[in-house]
Amino acid sequence: MSKPIKKKTYGLLAEYDSARAVYHACEQVRDAGYKVWDSHTPFAVHNLDKAMGLGPSVLPWIVFAMGMTGATLAMLLQYWTSAIDYPIIIAGKPYFSWQAFVPVTFELGVLFSAFGAVFGMLGLNRLPMWYHSLFNSERFLRHTDDKFFIAIEARDPKYDPQKTRELLERTGAAHIEEVED
Amino acid sequence: MSHAHDKPFVLPADQIHIPAGSMWRKMPIIGLLLGAGGLGGAWATSHGDSHAFWYAYLVAYMVFLAIALGGLFFVIVQHLVRAGWSIAVRRIAENAMITLPVMVLLGLPIIFLGAHDLYHWMDVAAVEHDVMLNAKKSYLNETSFLIRMGVYFLVWTGLSVFFYAKSTGSDGNPEAGIRAAHSMRFWAAPAVALFALSLTFAAFDLLMSLDPHWFSTMFGVYYFAGSALSIFSFISLTVVLLHKSGYLRGVVTTEHYHDLGKFLFGFTVFYTYIAFSQYFLIWYANIPEETMWFGYRIADDFLPLTFLLAGGRFFIPFFFLLRRGVKRNAFTLTLAAVWILFMQVVDMYWLVQPVLAHHHALESADHVMHLHIGPVDFLALLGVAGVFIAGFTWALGRKALVPTGDPRIEESVRFENF
Image 1 (spheres, rainbow over the protein chains, first blue to last red):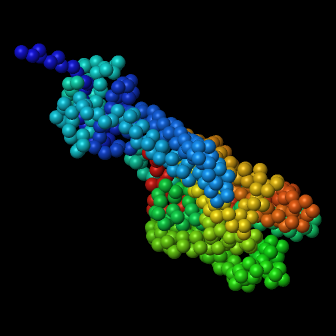
Image 2: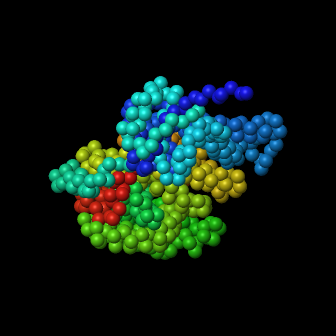
Image 3: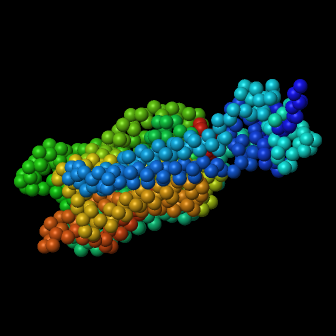
């Protein structure tokens, strides 16, 4: 006989009926000082990041670094191939004709920026993610339909099963449940 | 998700009207004095050298014509795409646009007095001995030049007066505002075609024909790119100054700064794209009659100026304006706007003055291209600036600072970037 699986708690999940309700609830959770928590809405609610107290993303810096890397690599590659590894005179112009290399430099800068944006976004969101504890909740499935959620994780230092539940009740949650990890 | 939506929307009257007695209302007189002093001084300091005067005047004229035409472009395009964000700053562009009739007046001396000093192809005897100019005679001759300039001036005056009258005519009258908004959107479509054609050919006639052997199909777009950069800088600067003197607060917001900054950034990239394309194709094809235009711009004294253009038009504003915070801060946006307007002056100088320096170099013994920046250049710039500022501030004080009758003014004042 197998041992009974020890159940861990992921956190508390609060359900709201409207974007307005979840927006103001986020402000209260933010002001209560919680850090490891998230909100889930069926559509983008404008300024929800401010209500949650989220800072600016680091993604632009990743994109900038990638773009600069791409542009530099492109210029160096063309310089090396055309002026060092296999020098060949084209149209009587110098080996290192930087003018001719600008389009490729630009394109590779854009390409690397796009890579930085897409894969940086996936990485920062820890995607792809094959398992998420919140899907243990039957009600949570409606977050892609018509319900709004706040989930406060148990690993948040301020998390307390009783006090956190009371806070969520004060925010006007329509339903609160504990979700398994 | 702003709470402001619960309250009724009222534009604060003290923020959108400049009272008589304000410094802004004295600017038309000050501008006219500067204009008379500047242009008179430029004529005096040119010491009878009519070439020096007209070339300096053309540089100054093209700088401020770019702002006025940029204003027309801004107004037409915002109607054409039915933009909501821009309505709170549209009146500033309209006031810049309504200086076009004034710019037409300032353009008349170029056509009737300066043209023979500026344009080599007007010299009938010289054209006879020049195979290429002879071949271009059907376009580059005085009569068709006069007719074309007349058409541009009519188009610019007509379009600017039409959009200005429609917009100011519905101030404070939401009923008329709705009708005006529909009418302006309808006419924006033909207007943008007229604008594009008139600006392109005016740039050909006024600037490109300075060196009549050279040609570039990209040239009209080049002038347009500078024009768009100029108007976004000019609007940013005007808004910052109006904020400083206590107007438009809470009407034009950080969000509008952000969008103006985005346009400055976008058109910096656009300028670089078309300016490099123009250079790149000519460099690649390497045809003497085309390359010589760049040839004497990278010769001798003009090489540093060309580097300044490349660095100051692209590298500096591009990296400076990349960050979001820079576009949302009044101080950094002002820095960017002042720099871009300065580079517009450098750009026009770079387009016009090498032609004269080239003539002088060919006549001199050592064939060296000399860069002369003297009082005549500064005074001509000051003079045209004075007249432009007089026209602009006169319009600014005359009506409300925002189109109060526009049906979507509330949307514009409350808009946010996400």
